[in-house]
Structures are given as C-alpha cells and as structure tokens.
Length: 535
Image (tube, rainbow, N blue to C red; front, side, top):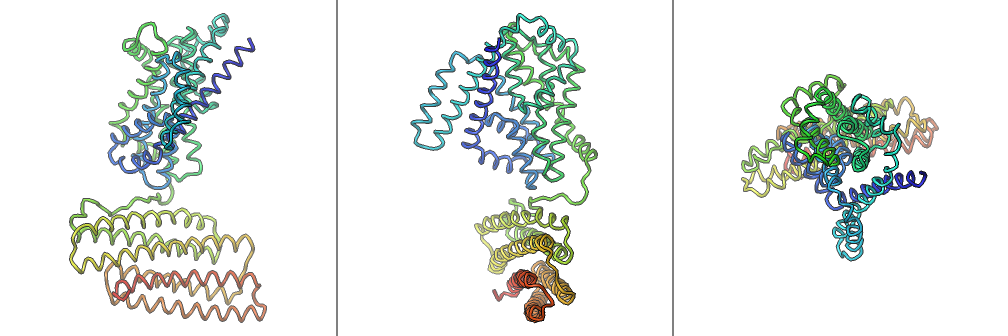
C-alpha cells in the first residue's frame, strides 16, 4: 500500500514539474511577445477575452496570464474592464490542458520524452531548445498522469473511500468545498483536475461527483490572483476581486442548474468516457460562464468598484490625449502631443512639490506617492517620444517642425525633473532614518528655495503649454533666481558648518538637496528657452 502512495505522490510531483517545465519553455519562447499583445490589443472586451484564452492556451497556465495581467494593471497599462476580459479568457484557455490529458496520450509518453530531449540537445537556436523543453514537459506531465492513474487502483477496494466520493453527487456543496480547499493548498487547478481524470480512468469517480469538485477548483485557483495583488495598486486588487466573484457567482449559478448542466455534458461527450466528460465539463463551465457575464460586464465592474471603493486617484501610465489616427493631420497631432507633454510635466512637477514637502517634514505616504508616480513620468516620456517619432514621418510646415523638435527636447527635460523628484523623496527618507536635522535658518532658506523652484517650473510648463515667449522669459529669470539663491544658501550653510551650528552630515545632505533643486530649475529653464527658440 505504501508503494502505491509513493507512486501517487511521485506522479503528482512529475505532473507539477512537467507543468512548470512546459510553462517556462512557452513563456521564454513567447512570453514577452504575448505580454506586448495583451497591452496593445485589449481595447475591445471581446478581443481581451480571446487574447486571454489564446495566451493561456499557449502558456498552459491561467495563473501566469492572471499574474501578467495584474502586473499590466498595476503598471497602469490596462483598465479594470480590459483586465477582466483577459481574466475571463484565461479561465477558458486553462481548460486546454484538461482536454489534452483526456486524450489518453500515455502510450506515447516515452516517444515525447525522447523527442523533447533530442530537440533540446541538438537545437542550435535558443527558441528550438525552448520547444524541446515544452515537448519534454508535456511528456513528463503524461508520465505523471500514468503514475497517478495506476496508483489509485487499490482505492477501488476501499468502500469508505468510494462512499465518500459518492457523497459529492448527493451533496454537491461538499464537493465544491473540497475542490476549493485542495486547490487553495496546492495552488493548481490543473493538478486537481488531472487527479480527477486519473480517478475517472479507474472508475473511482463519476461525472456527478466530479462536477462539484471542478467548480471548487475554479474558485480555489483565484488564490494566485489574490496573492499577486496584495502589494499592487487598488485597481489590481479590484481585478483579483473580480476574478474571485466571477468564479464564485458562476459556481453558484451552475450549482442551481446542476441537473441540466450534467445532462448537457453527457449529451456532448462519449457515454463511457468519464475522463472526456470531466474535461468537457471544465471547458463548458468556463465558456458558458464567460458568455453569461459578457453582456453584463459594465454592471459587474460597477459592482466590484462599489464593493472595493478606491480612495484618491487611480494611477494610469496610459496616454490620455495621444491618438495615432490624428498623425496624418500634423497640426492636430501636435496639439495632442503638447497636451500629453503638459500632463506629464504636471505629474513630474507635483512629484517635486510632494518630495520637497517630505524633505521639510518626512511623510511615508508622500514618499510612496512619488515612488508610485515616477514610473508614470517614465512611461509617458517613452510613449510621447514614440508618438512624435511617428509624427515626423508625415510632412510638416516649418513652424510645426520647430515646435516638434522643441517638444522632443522638453519631454526629455521633464523626465529628468521627475528623476530629481524621486531623488529628493528618497533623500527625505534617509534624513528621517539617520535623524539629520537642519538649523532653523537652513530650514527657512530651504522652504523659500522650494517655493521658488515650484514657481519657476510652473511658469516654464505654462510657457510651453501656451507657446508664449513672454511667459518663457519670466520663467528663465525665475530659474536664474533659483540658481543665485541656491549659491547663497550654499555659502551660508558652509558658514554655519564652520560655526558648528549644523552637524557635518547635515552639510553633505544640504549640498545634495541644493544640487537636485538647482537641476530641476536648470531643466525648467531649458523648457522655457525651447519656447523662446534659444535652445
């Protein structure tokens, strides 16, 4: 009996290892491309569902697709609605493995292992080796299935076990709970479904007992999304909640219609092939559930937002104004690019203001705000630059060409302002942790300089927005005043150090703060001079 237990555990281990090997190979071969496709082609809900199904069918891991999706949401590249479409599709795509397992390919295990190893050894290109890894992984999965199927044979002789399995049909809620709990522990619905199919092959479980467990596995597999969203932004947490509610509500609906559902599966499946019936039940649950939810997606998203309200703003790295359809009309495209650049500048400038406030009085929330919004600045810089690059492929009048060149430079300067804001925020944390304190005189000077930096950067953005040379001239003078005053502060601080009014470490920190504030003013001056045409 112990030998059968070890064989069963070994089969599970091989199944997990094969899944990991196969999934890793697929992700290495196509993961980055698939992520890019998800980011670019989820504008329509149906496309999101289809892409989610396709990506998951390729990666053979709904968990990988869900985690990837939550990462894109956390980065502000997908909205909640777009992400939910992908999640629904992932639920459908994950059923592909159950279908493959139900084909009973165990007779070809050794051939798949041989082919996979040979391709890995002989392939000269990296992608070829990854393909070999995928085939090898699938072979190991089937080997694990064969071991599990053989290991459960003795359970036929235990009436207690057979009676317990039989209760799932009479008490489906128990089956759902068992499926949910085991999947939560194992964190792989695929493994639990594989075990169900292995038991079905030996006549240990029928369709009526397997369906409730299947429903439970769909609920339990949501744990991956929940874990991935723990340290993510509020929208990503909403995606995890939507995933849970989608499967819970769907399971409740199917429990209420268990009889018709089972009858449907028996109708579309071979009579004596319970393994195929289980695979089809898994597919049909996720497919029908998705079809049921699609018409009510907006209402469902509104429900999720009510259940989990978000305090404050939702961070988005997606451009609000850029429209590639307008590239053929350069004057309109330029106007949109300017709007997006000003938006980027306002995000960077707000980061500067919050970072300077944190320097004056450290606040963990302010530090977190800056660190969360700095990637927005970086992302917008990339997207605006790409947009302007595409725009340059279309003919433009001379005045527009000059504005185009100025904007390219301005975007770079704004990105650098964002970097200095991040540096100031991190410096505020260091000051707090190392208990660095400035004298009252130094604090007063820093406060005045902060106000000057904010005014100078604000006027520069205003000049860029309005393309106004008079405002640009004012901004340039304000930036020069910042430079003069920071030199004065530097001189005063050195004097205070000599008089021992400040600690030496405070002196070094002060100089670093002054350098970053001066550079923010320098980049602001660059933006203003671009408007003046003196760059």
